[in-house]
Amino acid sequence: MRRRPLSTEGADLSSRRDKEDRATDSTRHVFGPVASGRLGLSLGLDLLGARICTFDCLYCEAGVTEALTTARKPYVPARRILGELADWKAAGHGLPDAVTLGGLGEPCLNTDCGEIIAGARELFPNVPVAVLTNSSLLSDPDVRSALSGADIVLPSMDTLVAAEYQRLNRPHQTLGLDAIRQGLLDFRGGFAGSIFLEILLVAGQNDSAENLGLLREFCRELAPTRVDVVTLSRPGAYPGAKAVAGDVLARFREALGAARPGPWAPSGDGHGPAGLLGDGAARAPRDPGLTDADLAARIAASVARRPQTAAGLATALGQPAPRIQSALDALLRTGAVRRERSGQDIFYSG
Image 1 (cartoon, one colour):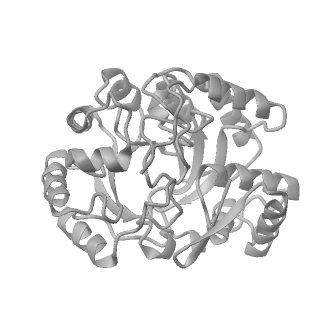
Image 2 (cartoon, rainbow, N blue to C red; image 1 turned 120 degrees about the vertical axis):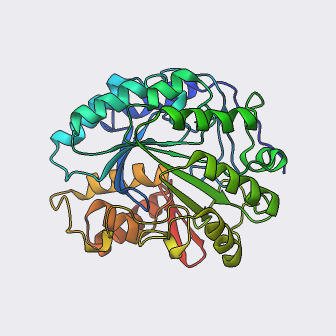
């Protein structure tokens, strides 16, 4: 598969996007909440502001990486993100189940991530702070130290077969698989919080017996709080990324002691399994006074980071399904969002 030319630095890209949107969007980097299979209603923090990452994974739901880099910088400064988070809290929204550092790229690239974790915990003292990471930078002691203040870290490890890693994760050329594996083990040794390990399977890419055997040994050594084995249910970045068959998924889950998919996993088996913090279908509506314009802006910001269904958006934003669908239809007409069917579900993305 041909690799799209990528920038090697992301700071200029992030800064330009930030300036373009700052005047019209007071919460440019705070989005959601999103109905997360593992975290419940997860309020997202985008630490990059653009698709800046250490990987260019075939399956990435955020889309093709625009800047492939390992350069750590304050892409979006802590003061900006925490200011937006304080504004979101002051607006009187219902409390999320988690505040999650993630967004469009690898959040550990942001050198302010430790300060952002600490600030989020101060603003929301009774809400767990989580970090989504592809594990690529955990070999850096500074990154491990920054993440030590989180309550939950959700690292990925899709394969321990070197050829599969290169083909599936498409990493920056300086990132070796052995160092990533050891970095995750080193982080586990000094982290007091919970680790939710995610393994995402792509048909013909990392579903080999060799990978299953290596992952089984790794999970025994790592001893994470939980293991989630998933496959694609949302559109990926590249058309070559396809979901594995159900029997393959079941075999990996059984061998690795994975958690069972929960009520917010699209079609039951997709990326984001196992509802941990409650069934979103039972939640009361939130933000009943949200204007149509504000609702449209929140939907657009949320699906720009993660493709979602109309039902998922209704659960996450506490709005009736017909109102969500009406807002989505209006955004479709203007070209602000697009829709795509994946399996039994229809997803909306930016």
